[in-house]
Length: 319
Image (tube, rainbow, N blue to C red):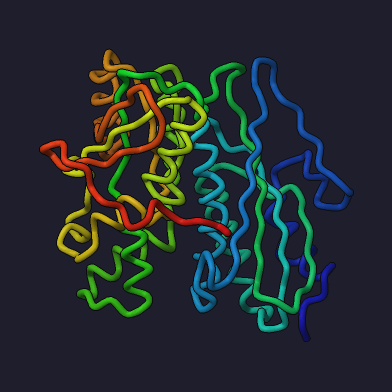
């Protein structure tokens, strides 16, 4: 027998709300949240669609993890700390109970890992593909949130981790030939983002602007430029690659425009370099200075000798 709407809520979703009193055991129309003095609520929302943002045959627990993690990455980009989340599930008939059970287990594992709870949402049926939406709630000290609008000419451009792995991982799932170990790492980066929450929180007071790399480095840096009314120059020779991605054809284009990296891209005054370099050692993953901010508009990518790089595309476009 297929789980009905209320069976789904009672058996699979209510356990995800345990431990958060304001969730009211998912029995009311809304949740209640008290914020401590001196904190602001940070709210973000992302939706994922089968065969658009994940493959329809991806493991359900990893789909759940990706749904939660891409939203947590938005909190990281604001320097926020996770609090709770709400989900919406538009379920086609092809999604059976076993799939939903593994999906709920994936949510549980990651909400325990990142310190948040389900507090509400909605479920419905659809004749189209599986659609999953999640609204994430976080908190940040009042007035300390990172935004896209603070970059200034003369500042550095930095990015965390490595770039291009996720886009190459998607190519592997679609048939790109690599070794088994390489496939495991690259596909893992596509299916399991690593929200840089600790870094985002540590950048409060250091970074002047920040964004997560979801649509592609050039596209997302362009958002900072637009909101800050500045231009950016990226040195392609400084882009950080993993050892696995470095030798793959098209790795540079994947790093510049592939998207799905969910690394933090941020700007900071030159005087902040020692603190940011020290921070990299503390948090256990790389932070690389890849360019600078100047007057003007838009993003320019250059070779080490300053010659411009032709960009076939700038990143993912939703429409």
